[in-house]
Amino acid sequence: EVQLVESGGGLVQPGGSLRLSCAASGFTFSSYWMHWVRQAPGKGLVWVSRINSDGSITSYADSVKGRFTISRDIAKNTLYLQMNSLRAEDTAVYYCARDPYSSSCLGDWGQGTLVTVSS
Amino acid sequence: QSVLTQPPSASGTPGQRVTISCSGSSSNIGSNTVNWYQQFPGTAPKLLIYSNNQRPSGVPDRFSGSKSGTSASLAISGLQSEDEADYYCAAWDDSLNGYVFGTGTKVTVL
View 1 (cartoon, one colour):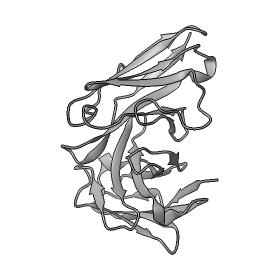
View 2: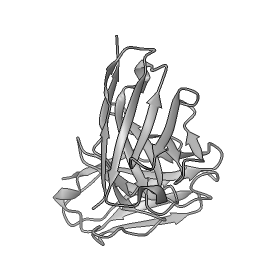
View 3: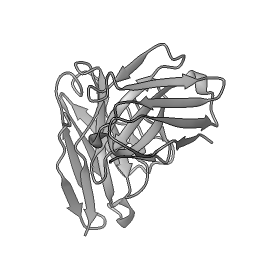
């Protein structure tokens, strides 16, 4: 069974940093593209970033480009999202997701972790 | 901010057919496949339809998807009370080099 478990969320001040983790199990982690998606309270889904199977290709939404960095540790079966220069508008539940078909189709999702940016 | 447009709400009585539209452009729906997600309050989204019209294992066949040009639609036939949820379309956008979601549609079962 595919399992994705996010962690690392919490309260951070504007301008601060946070690193989210997504522990993967139940599948060959090194074979799949992975994504981060966020959802502000009461709002819709917004794609944040993606990374290919070996970590050599990454993409970001314009709203986070230059501030967020996606990475993966194949040995630890873990996906990361390093978030710097955080803003109030980054407040959201952050989900990691697996693309099972290498076609930007998010087939499996974690439960999400809440990031709150506030002073 | 969303580049894919959906109606904010849709509704029907049990057993009815409900259709949700998703309007995009040549850089997203016009040149890439469309996926649909279902989300219940307080829970993670779930993949409902992929590659325009394919259902993942376990998704009831009353859910169906289609695409034509720069638009797509999700149909729910034989609406049931447990279908009350938010629905999002999504597709890769070649111009933005990013994945874009629709604005979301809340389905209410009357």
